[in-house]
Image 1 (cartoon, chains in turn blue, purple):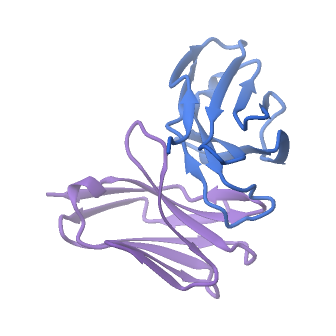
Image 2 (cartoon, rainbow over the protein chains, first blue to last red):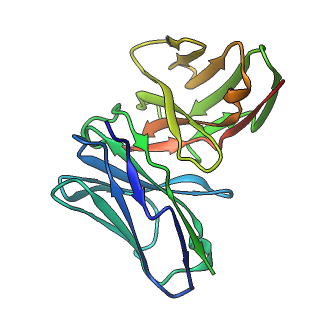
Length: 117
Length: 110
């Protein structure tokens, strides 16, 4: 069974640009969550999608957005990039949404390393 | 995350010895506590988890204990090996999301 696939693995962008990251969850999993990982803040929850709907959202500005497609693949978008957006962005795949079953497992992908210069 | 505290931040052990990492959480409604191992350049890997209806769970050299009254849980690694060197994160399901501890860097000395 294939794991969680995130593309691209590495990105370098300039301040002010926008970026789109992609995540394909484990086959059969319908919930996708996004996390930002930085040395200073650790792992911070961005949002969760299930059945193409955002189920939960963390404390990030509106520049961070996402969506989910009918095949459960998800994308997240960051507009007007700032230097502080440099981070490892991680996608987690779950069989059920945490909003409905908060003891469900979450499996992470390798992440996308975003560097903003 | 601010709702989950993890200690210690670094841990160095001799190969063959045991390693223990402790976490506390704030929300008494939390009922799911996973542990992740993250190696350099990789995403976090789920290594073991525990739900609030059990007090202890073991998987080979790894065990997790949960004390719901005191709101803390711990990871125990026995007979440590060099490949156990990594950053370990605890997490708790709080407000319908996973809140993570700050991580423990474990180094196993040969």
